[in-house]
Amino acid sequence: MEYIIILISAIFVSNIVLNQFLGICPFLGVSGKVSTSVGMSGAVLFVMTIATIVTWLIQTYILEPFGITFLQTIFFILVIAALVQMVELVLKKVSPPLYQALGIFLPLITTNCAVLGVAIQTVSKNFNLMEGVVFAIANAIGFGLAMIIFAGLREHINLMKAPAGMKGVPIALVTAGILAMAFMGFSGLV
Amino acid sequence: MNQLANFTKGFIRENPVFVLLLGMCPTLGVTSTAVNGLGMGLATTFVLVCSNIVVALVKNQIPDKVRIPSFIVIIASFVTIVELSMQAFVPALFESLGLFIPLIVVNCIVLGRAEGFASKNNVFSSALDGLGMGLGFAMALTILGSVRELFGNGSFFGMKFLEGDAILIFILPPGAFIVLGYLIAFINKLRKTA
Image 1 (spheres, each protein chain N blue to C red):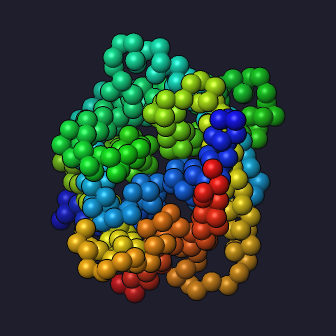
Image 2 (image 1 turned 120 degrees about the horizontal axis):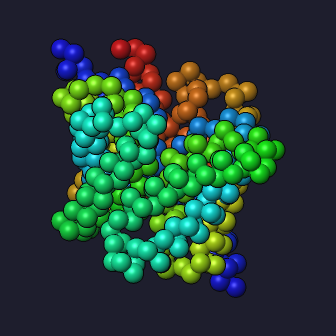
């Protein structure tokens, strides 16, 4: 039951992009086409889940026993950066088709604050490992959902007439605002 | 003259938020009030200046292949310093900025300036560049925060001048996107006519 609550609240109620403002850079940057945003969401799902497991283990078995939790930021960002590199190498060897699909998005993920944000939140909310995994997957799904809906909207907006000054990013931001308003309808669900 | 340009380019011409569109997460996430925006901007400025100085100092010692990880460690160290100092001296601001303080480390502006400017220039220009970019960022966040606070809460830097509720949507998440969208459109217009 707790798992379902974690899932629903992370996907809809406090959506990572539209409510918590994490991962805005890829949300605005690679949301031009639905196909690329699907690829990006897949890569985020992959990395976010692995990163949350690894950082949880580091927090519980290294940082806390040695009393060096103040080094959390440095540890986590290095682990995530190294992890992304490793995932890239492993994917290249093990599953070339998956690498083809996700490859170009992987380097971008290191600076995606959503991954670090979810890792820190998992630790600060005192989740156990299983809850952490569910939380990470739920957030990645929430990211994908927002991203794909937004990409679909942008494909249409690009064909519309907009005032000269509003073209491009401004109109995209206003659209994102209206999408965020729609997601506010989910508040109070859990 | 050139040094002056290094300093001032961050304000309008290459403003990180309005023009380069970097560091959007804290921009949208913490600007529900002007004070939060200013606090976040100044914290980022500190990290930017310090990391730019250190990167410019050690740029010749770092092998090219491990450049990016080294920069990240430098930045993360300064972020930790900011995090601990804010927790000690301004606990209220620390609480309201929350998750976004450790996330300065993945703010694209900081790594972007380290990689794009400080790794190629001397210490003095790098410090000026960091200061200019940081203050430009702080300015953008304060403007966004002021607008949202003004309409959403009827107050300015915490000084309340409107009884009761204002237009609540401005301080809720959708307001962040919409206000920033219109501000960028406005700045685009200014840059075209200027």
